[in-house]
Length: 109
Image (tube, rainbow, N blue to C red; front, side, top):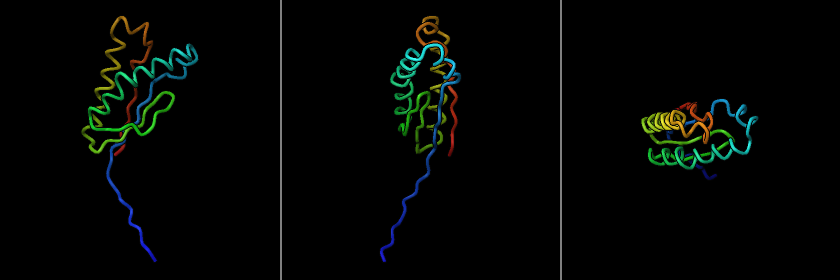
């Protein structure tokens, strides 16, 4: 009988979602979806790659990413949250990005 061996590895998982996304979708479905895709393309994905992570899955309002290092995952989460807050704080972003300044990030190791 052949035996198989499972390969195991440790990983840190970052789960991030937009706070109040359902409310935003109710007010402007197409615009909200487009703004989230822009944040994903311009901020979230580059930060995840910069911190040696990879996106495992995207959802309507969130991202699931994997990192080999907890330190990289925490740094990435902080930079994403600060980037979202800067977008909200700038005067121009209030009309172009609505309230995407609040992104909840959860880490599991």
